[in-house]
Length: 594
Image (cartoon, rainbow, N blue to C red):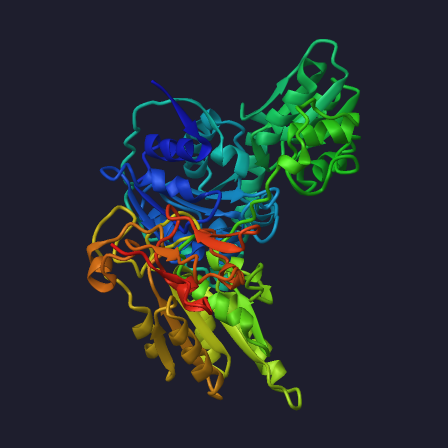
């Protein structure tokens, strides 16, 4: 049976067909849907959201040690968080098969940086697979477990955004119920130096075996087109992009198994063509290796070192030509920058933060990162997940050294990010007697990646009721003495809390607690917040003077008629949060009469 699947859906199907028993992940674009789809096979696979990627990889490793086939998935920056266990499990070996999926994002569509995680596989000395289609994604998942168990190693699989989210036909097969292998105690997995030194030798021996496999496997194959003098070496989605540009005018070496690299196949392919192009995203991972073999090739000296190697980029870089397309009048294109949704509980906080002087705001990874943009302009820097509170602490410590300094530093992060790595950052603030202001935006869900459950939501990934971890109680248990919980839609509460925190000369924590405007309410949400988002705000045109102050809230439901000089609120978008109502100096915004 064939089904149309995204790469992420195909990965999930491959895990199911391969007999995977346990899966763990932290949501992150473009990898999120992998675990969401694995979770649908709840009769066969236990799938769990972990607090962060490090924990996900460790949990999946433990399951593999116990004898089950397991998988951990994450986006590219997530592997930075999980690098510690990755490098160690590369030494210990596994029992059941173990696959770690990294979803890289060339072009940074939804990420703070662009990195090539193939380098992790090379550095950790673990095998690496790179599928190019949804069908390959499913098939390679099954192959990955065979490689993992045969060579006693975790296997990395690198996806990219276009594969994760593009669809293709996939031939679905029955599940292979491999069962759970017997557990046997192996003291060498206790990685004290005496054991690790011996395992280090094992890693090198395994590399030799994997190198032989790389040259033999059909995962690396040639497509030779008669008379073609140009050759292309590529992997992943870049293989498809290159074929769209070169067609039958080139021959291809398609690399699906890229660590270790198949030296013999590369040399054989080079002997069949005159000019070789290396098409890859993002680093010169293949190119540098090919050149190390003494093979001349053209790569990043012509193609960009960053971004996606889409067909238009390849064509323009190599042939100095553009794809033909319909011309569009620039004035017809309306810019639509991302913004907080109407009714977003972050709006009130950032509206007030942005008005304050002598405030430095350290941001974090989430919807609330948009607080940097107009009309709020309420964020100074962002590092990575969980870094807001710790970077705010360090910033405040140094500013405190400046004579006469009156600047206060605020760290802002969301509830899921707090559970991810923000807890550790807050410990740093409290333990080291900091006086920065920590604000935790508890919107009751993991909003940025599409409403995944988290430790504070009260539900597991597969829909089971579970303990809802109370952020206020956690913060107080860490030793925070100054803690306030506020409704961020009430601007008086926001300002009172900010004034209170700024007036303290020690650490403080403000928790804004209000659900995401798009959240599906649980019974617990209804019990706490009531039937919110059911009322609307309207503009009394007789009172409105067209001052545009309401537009400074950044709500997409509000617009101003320039000719009439009157504001209006789109009833279809408005959720009645009342932020604009509180901002209006003429009381021209009121609640709609029922």
